[in-house]
Image 1 (cartoon, protein in one colour):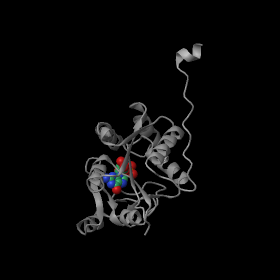
Image 2 (tube, rainbow, N blue to C red):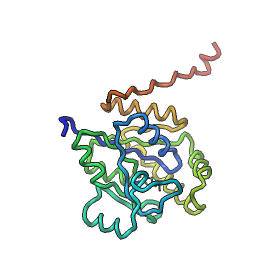
Image 3 (tube, protein in one colour):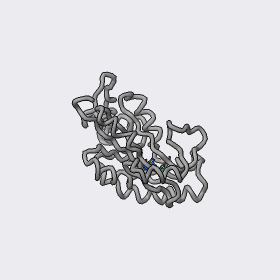
Image 4 (cartoon, protein in one colour):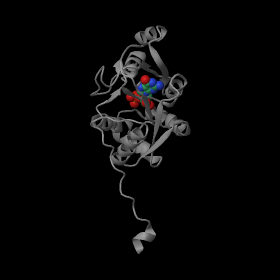
Length: 212
Ligand code: 5GP
């Protein structure tokens, strides 16, 4: 066990905001950051792998593990259809070993985590404009119209909760959002031999400056 305890990073944002891509790039940039693989009762999408994207499990197993207190938090997302949860085993031993662990969970889950880990570093990813969510969900084409409507309704509610997060990052371009998240982690004390936070993008001149 290391002297310094690890830290918990919680990333949330509405469906369609580009969290998954952002997180994948973040983890590729920062190999010392450990992702917590959530458990879910939702069926895998094409290309998703058990134990990598999620621990996929039938509802009976989820219930059994919930009763055995194996989750730090869990809830039913999207019209109460599927269960999602953070397993204690994915987080606690790594924190005790001094690692930084990152969770990608919804707002309700974040609030439960904050009750147990008030020092968690919370980051909310926001769209640059509301239409971005609809366009991304339509482009992804993985959801039925009803499921998409449900996700957009949940997204609308989640955007109202953004103020509860310690940091907010607008995802207009993945590169810029990634740089911003890395700078947030650096200000929160993340460091490793391989980590050099991306520099801030050059400031765009104001219209007045461009005229002169
Ligand atoms: P998806 O079905 O698109 O993979 O994820 C749906 C939502 O579930 C996302 O908003 C994601 O953040 C959330 N989610 C994923 N894992 C967990 C978890 O372990 N706990 C909670 N509370 N939400 C989760």
